[in-house]
Length: 233
Image (cartoon, rainbow, N blue to C red; front, top):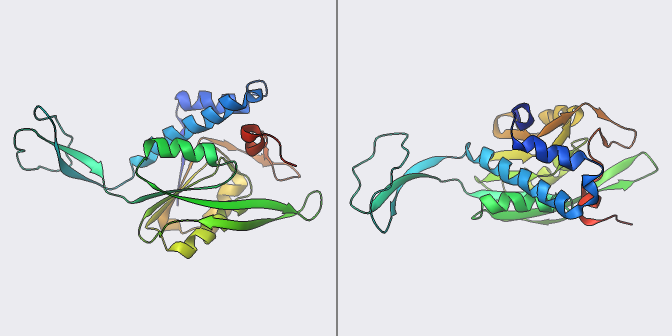
């Protein structure tokens, strides 16, 4: 399993993550949602570098546009532009409800992708102990496709594990990209044991060390769903 921490490289991504954490900027739910979307857009671009590509002839109105080649191709006819474009069948999935703006960021760049949705929530047995429950799934067939599972926060990793298992009822994907904004070390260690090592890549924007007694990431950012959509009862 490969883990990619995009926060290890200096980029505008780090500014968006910093704003998500900032208690003053968090008061603007519109900006919070937009920053989550922006991070989804950046991750979609980075993940797209892992797709399979082939050269295809693209008809342009006026002439030949320079293409990028991984291997020699035949000389194109006038007005044909050979370009490398992705071949993967993409399915973007998310865990409701916190994942919705993150999902939208991915969908803006991977606009031809199919979509899947899973509900996963904590059902508390007492103040500190809870189980993860899955009550809803809507997904296309996944067999052989490239699956992106997006969830802004990886705290314990349990929700991601159960969402993945629920999605497997729709077929086994060719590769799985787990995308999260902030992850705990515990979640990464947990998922490394639970997801297929040779077919999984985990993408994060920040890695935090600790979980508190309620299994929230510290320093984290709080409850991403509440910050995006308002407090729930």
